[in-house]
Image 1 (cartoon, rainbow, N blue to C red):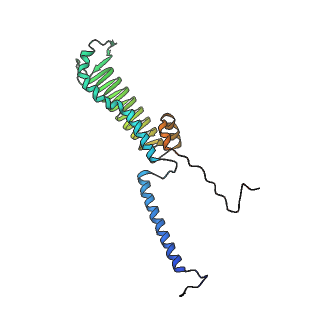
Image 2 (image 1 turned 60 degrees about the vertical axis):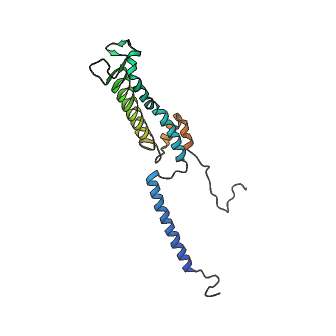
Image 3 (image 1 turned 120 degrees about the horizontal axis):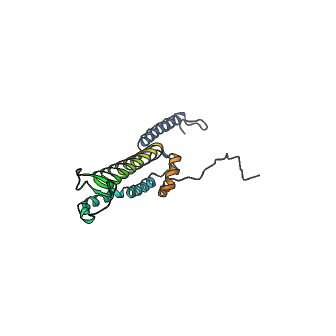
Length: 226
């Protein structure tokens, strides 16, 4: 039997096991901090995969006008011949295609304006300013673009009261990397933002899971027994 005495704890083995457990806990804590630095704190009620899938869908829908913008620019040279006598609204043309026939070529000024720089109620261009602005850089009540600033802003970089994009900043902000007062992102899931965006963008609901609560009871307590 050697030196083993029944009933006497093997202190060496216990101390070694305790040291190993301590090392494992430290390594686990180190790895957890590294992961949180990338994706944020772990939230068991949040599915990152479902969030990314739903967000990709909505970003595609919101940015579809930009994808169609290329087609519009291809057709721009044909528009003056197709629409030769559009009416004026006061001094402002109903439609201006990049300042064609004016002393500001390349700059669209009209109710509906196209151009390298476009200014109008609906403005579409490399730089766009309007109530609805679509472009590489867009400023408007509703703005869509690579860089968008507006009350409702959608784009790679979006800033507004409601901002949705890769890097979004706003009162309500949605995106993989979003910043603001109420944020729904990979790193933050503020309840106010979650409730707001899920209401209007229901596909995001799949990203929020709520596990059933587990209430532990001591073994000597049996609440179902009288």
